[in-house]
Length: 293
Image (tube, rainbow, N blue to C red; front, top):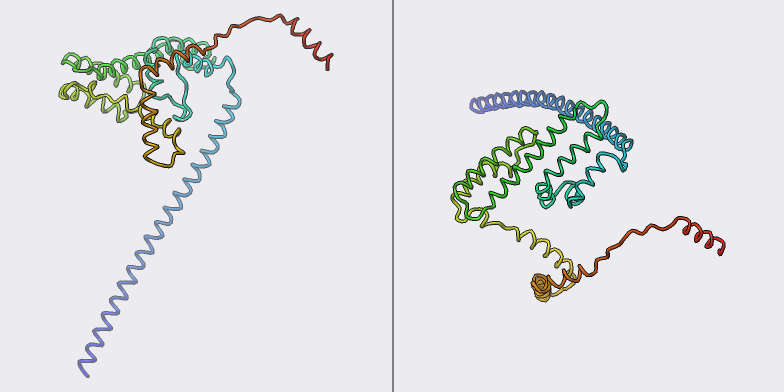
């Protein structure tokens, strides 16, 4: 009996201690949960305010765009026309920005483009603009120089079998281009980092240089493959589909077929001329049609 009583007493003490420990843990958890709820409510309120601010700003931006419009003589229209004159158009599938081929065209015509942009911006500048004509000229000149520097850096990086002098010249170009990027407030993207930190090493120690490892044909292959997949998408047999695609690709890439296609396209072009018609004749013809009705 005495042993049973001692065991029961110890058991009660253990249970009491466990209950006290659990109650203390529960209180601590409740306190932490209350603090987390307060923090969550604060974050939720901040998010609500941010969303309201974003919605208000979007409405204001939409109102500004609606009021501004795109007239024939607006700065934006003139800029798009200037880019279109050198074959550059904004790609909707590319997020409205310029793709790689368009950037190359801008680089090749950077002197003409940015000189004309300076004229367009100075002509369309608002009376209360904080930029003077000298500031506009300096900014356009800076952009032009950065484009020319990057064009030179890419050209040197693509050199086949570069010599040490080519690598040193590349380093001068890329350092100046990155410095110009920083001055314009552009971010250092992974491609910029690769050009700055790794390309010179690869030009020195990769046999043939990076120019010997270019894969420009891959992009062309992607475009051709996409068209052929679309063309033979209804062929059910995978073997017949693959053979047909390969046969079509072989025909399209044959030099004689390409030359004949170019000749046919050149012969089918229409060279339209503008003929000014007397308005009096048009008016008389319209009057006769109306009387005949």
